[in-house]
Image 1 (tube, rainbow, N blue to C red):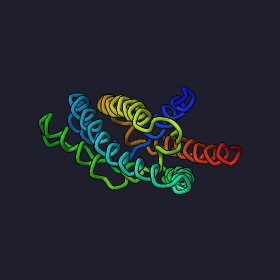
Image 2: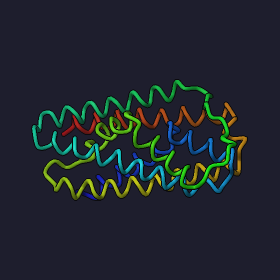
Image 3: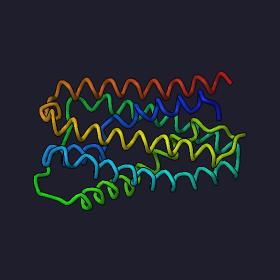
Image 4: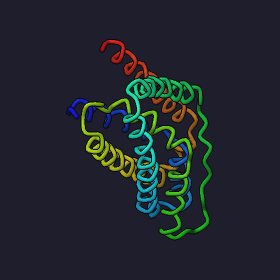
Length: 207
């Protein structure tokens, strides 16, 4: 695996993680209701959930890689289209961010478990990883070595992202209720996702 592939994966992951999904909405809802103390347990829960989803995804990707080069290539093309689809959906989301503060007191263990469940058991998480990860794999390289590096990178970024969201939401609570800020955020993220999917297709057609 080249440094360029890793850097591209890290950059794409950072963009994708920053876009609010069910997990981030959960993190923000706890932070809005209970403040900064939610940051660490929620971030740990998110990282554990992503670890579970990514590990399950790896097993499927490894099987496809071993089965057929053509099937694996089709998966990568479908993954690029999926990135564009996510980008369009996010761009069209406008200024809405449906999140309500969770005011009921919860222990750190309960918050961590809740974050893990929402992240790991969301079928879209596994589907996403199966579509996303192959974009950066070298089929001729050591599969498990690459996946170890990619998983460690993603989990570190996921932990940091969830922690940042919780701390910012707890401190600057009005931002989560500002439609204008959310609209700009959604459109910027959607444009970046569409660009990432298009760039993947362009690079593939040039090979």
